[in-house]
Image (cartoon, rainbow, N blue to C red; front, side, top):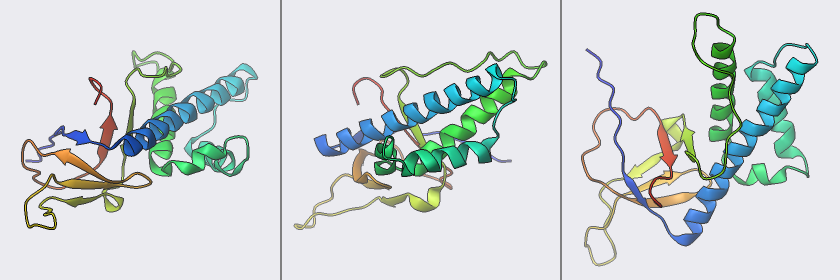
Length: 171
């Protein structure tokens, strides 16, 4: 029997890491809102919608443009994952058997989160020691953010499938 389990840990970020995470989450929100606006525009002109591959091509052009060059400074995996979620949300909104509504634009500081879908790019240092040989907080490596300390409140068991970073209660 397959057991799937989610575990939450509090990140202990430096002010620089907190700024990088806020910018990365802001870029994810921007990608969602921009892609949703494009999809609405396509629907208004009776052209259907773009699929995930078409949205990824748009994301690449946005990341390479000067106007939206700030997107290239944050990790691309959460931005691509956002496009997957948007594609799925649109598919469910047009499904007659689903009770889901059309997706909404995201607001700042409301459910801020981003997901790293590929665990191959995420690394853990679960038993770090400092120069004096004392144990310190474990660390997780997030692409474009760096090594971030976290409070390990329970053991990490099993295979890690993805990592979601979200803001809750000022942390």
